[in-house]
Image (tube, rainbow, N blue to C red; front, side):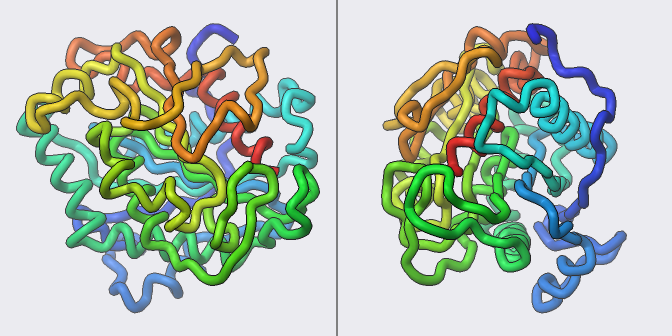
Amino acid sequence: MDSPLPEADAFTAYDTVRLNAEGMLLDGREAVPPAQVARHLARLVSLPERVTDIFVFAHGWQTTAERAAASSRRLFSAIWELYREAPDRYPPLTPFRPFFVSVQWPSRSSPLPAGYRRMRDRAHAMTTTGHAAHVLAALLGYLDDERRRPAGADVLRTAGGQYLHCVGHSFGCRLLGEAIKEAAAPPEHRTLAWPWPQRFPFAVDTFLGLQMAAPPSIFTGRFRPLVNGAAPIAGPTVLTFSPHDRALALWHAVPEGTPGLGAVGAAGARVTDLRPVEEPYAAGDFTRLTSVDATWRYQDGSLVQGAHSDIWYPETVHLLLSLAALGR
């Protein structure tokens, strides 16, 4: 399991949500008015009843529509194949019937600093002055409303229901982070497996950010609600980093004045290492905010981006499946 994940489509059953440059939901080529988003989501995303886990993936910078679809299939296939290879690694995931949603947005630009600034500003605008946070929060709210929520006593691995996992890469982490912040948040509840109180019903059970394009301090400021119990997320926020990520170590530092989170880790986070597939994770490895040092694995890439997109390894999927299992 030491080689990168293949790009073959071993498992391709998923739905797609597309956004335009203003963050508006697209139905075909037409932008959906904000008041009609919920109705259109119900038609664009159909949640099968027997599903156990829902994975929502948002791609990152420099991704064409074709590549966004291919990256989604690659991740979704890898999740399914790694589980099928050795389900006994993840005993709580029994049964495991995943459903996948691919979030796609226009992310192409010049690879130079001006292009980076353009995508940074677009990702920020889509989720602040634009509509992306509203649309993705509506998506998470729709999935949360449609699924059977995990429920029962506050005891490890006793819950049934359908779990909701968010996975972002690069700027896609920002889109999902804003969406979780915006998601509706009714009354008090507690998590099942994670060792901290949670005052919301289950809205998002895990959030994994792969090489996040953001300042290292974003979780002490703008995204603090994701880690202090003020946003509807039950599990930890987990963020990979590698200093070999040249896009964030260099190109992020030029316009931002500091290397990106995906190159140096999140400020104030616990740090744990990315583990080989054969080595399990435990709940105690994670706090509400955890950086995962992937230096030993995320190493290769182009002269411009470095290891920014060198994430396609079984170890990445092992981390994601481990988080899904630990939240039971």
